[in-house]
Length: 79
View 1 (cartoon, helix red, strand yellow):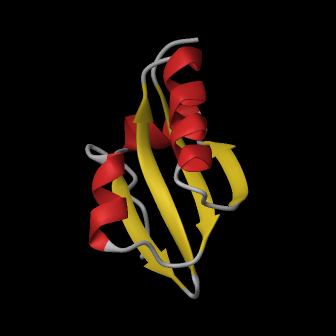
View 2 (cartoon, helix red, strand yellow):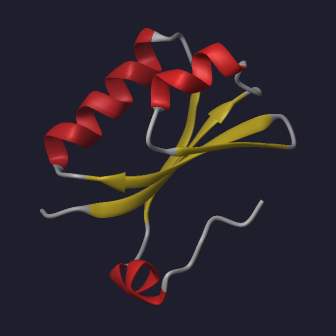
């Protein structure tokens, strides 16, 4: 698996301090949830991201890999 874009949704709105734990990713609060979005290098990096979410005590709602064409088209996260 090469680099791929992901949207990870967690419950609640993250404080700025907690959001900094996801440096390099977009962190956007939407209707009581937070979307953490961006490129993930490989499976090991995805597992590290999910571990970080667990270590921070966040409740995971969903994880979605974006289709490859999304990256090529330059699509951005809608807020």
